[in-house]
Length: 114
Length: 112
Image (tube, rainbow over all chains, first blue to last red; front, top):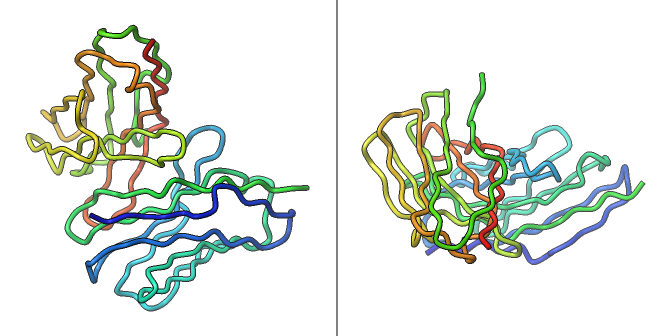
């Protein structure tokens, strides 16, 4: 079974600076999908970014980008120019190529200081 | 476009009571699923469905039942609530393999 590990329970960043959230996963599959979701205090789950494992290019969405290292099974999220609205719980998730059942990490709480 | 609608937002049950969490989506998604979120454990899959009439168990199915009579609706039933089922529950839907999940706003359930 696949597992997802987020080793940083909490992170802090100064407004306007850059922060990187770590995620590693374990799988024997060669094709799969990876996601980062954001959960603000409102409890809503918001998709941040999606990566397809067969694509070498790292996904980017405005200030959010990933460093996808397939051989190392690592999928970190970089947030540039951090804003107060980025403060949230961030979840890394894995999806097999054979279905759409997501396996989530435990989450990282990101605090943004003004 | 409502997306995924989940009700209720909050619920308190006594041990042994039953209830149904409602979930509906208007995006014509084939895939629907239920997750529970507990502190330090992320979200864990309870049950899922790949289409009307088809359901299957996820990682933590015990104590929960589901059915999928229509594409739009995917209710989650707790037959006899236990304190261990105190959690936040999310319903989600997607087009299918590799597509991002669209989540409802969650239900905070407390079982006393």
